[in-house]
Length: 164
Image 1: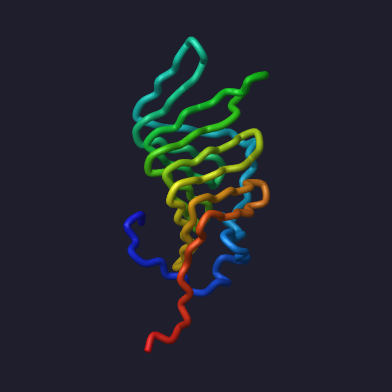
Image 2: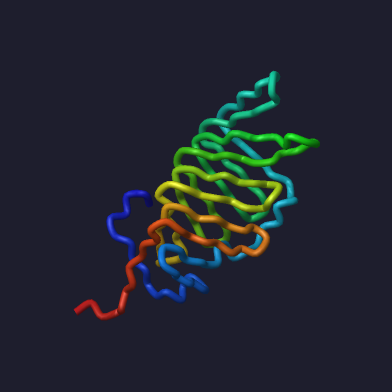
């Protein structure tokens, strides 16, 4: 998907809804809203835990599953809360792909704030919803509402239907 030469946007309404303003756009991402308080399952080829600070780094074919949401990457670092128990955030890098329902997004990096229920994707973000695609430099997703905001040179092509 990263090597798509041209982006084809087959109808602006497919993004249900898309609102473009300047260099940003808002859209609905994922057909099912995700409850950020549900358990997070992580699988990977390797796990490195540092006893000194309690940090953990998953590497190789990392897959994070939470409800119907799937996040895959080459590497994911777990950042613990500074106060209390639990995970504050998951920082993914390398071949990052986020899938929710039939929607998918890819980027170079993703920062999933478990406590805020938000995912911020950066670096060559490409969102695919059916036959429609939109690209940007940055995307922020609110998991509770399913709302996403794209910013930083948002790009799409509009297919008018008349190819003559």
